Length: 558
Image (cartoon, rainbow, N blue to C red; front, side, top):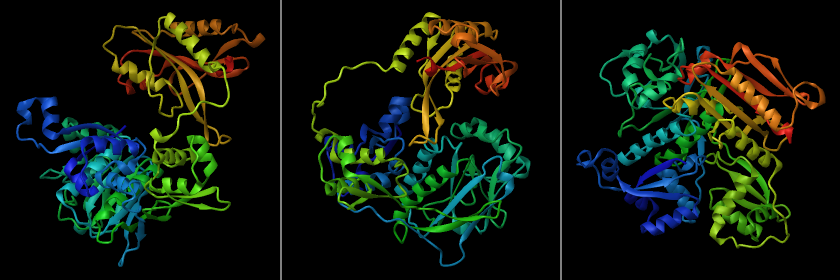
């Protein structure tokens, strides 16, 4: 969960009242958040670097608040205050508007050279905004939080904010050879080529983590204005020429990336949070983006959509008995404007552009439960008697875990909450983090992977996979092959194609060394692959020795 640090006094001023620490902790819990820590900048530095380093640091009290990972609208003071005020019914949720400019619309033109690097871009303008030191700091902090969260450390989306008055449109998003890009980056006093900057930033504690995204590409993405001034070289650094200051009044925001949907979400979040400080509150000036195919789109979308949920469904799922009118009121407190329509049991919910986390009816039900209060849900005994029993798939999983451990493999638990199509990368990352351990490293994991399935209401389904990896000075293919034989023996699946047996057949796979990969067939169907990993795959995970792996679907054996 992301943690948002806010100054306590600034927070209370924005909320219009003060709280004791216990009262604010309770308010956070009611709203589905958690007050993680009460500290100060001085205390943080003292803990991490010692008392001497903390001398002169600020004593201002900070609240560290844990926010759900998909609530991007709560990652800054502005969104947090707005959400709490609407929740306590002190204000109504604002209506966000996109307006066309009085003069010529700002235009961002994408060239075809960007196609293989960062093919998407969106843009908008915050007109007549007023920054203070705290607002400016919050603006920068929100960008950083988004970069670390939905933007996946700038790999999917990178944000650039620029002083529009220092630039001249239209703007061009293109890609050039690193030696052809030269500009003065943020906080530097002279111009550098892109090649020079990549070398300089290799020792920069903040920026070095993003260099890998483009450093091996033949072309680097770059944004120019009509005079050839560089706005930014995404996803690494902005130009110094257009940096925003406390005196900036018009902000041009561009988001470039490899994921178009996430780029639009990120832009919507930034402009909705900080349009509060514009002369016309919650109003955002549109910008036009022209794609290489000639099609043009206007951003930000700021799209509102409506969903229908039956009141009896909410009551049943949460375990309460509320009238449709009360449920609509609860949802409105969560910034989901709602009203009862139709037969009196149907609730129409308006999803604002700030709530990209609302994907399914269950998300709406969850918000109704939060607004009602989990502690207010009456505890009741089930009306039916049942005898609990373990799911067959989970029982099989547990049995295999014990036998995998008995075979000398160590279980790893990687990112189980992430939608994965294979377990192999997680195990390779685990090996990379434990390279100093004695060889050989023999790891396994049994967990779910996700594949697309249009027949399901959520568009995907899970499969239970078993993955094992052997890492040593030699590939150890015979070890992995022997493990497969042992697993099949435990599952009572004989070798051979007859009588529902299993066989392996030569195959190819992008992750495997050519000629060292086999596909596993059992009971007439393909269940997975095993083989020696390709050196390119191994080096990508910063590993230096050969590695063999096995990954199979265990569900056909139920």
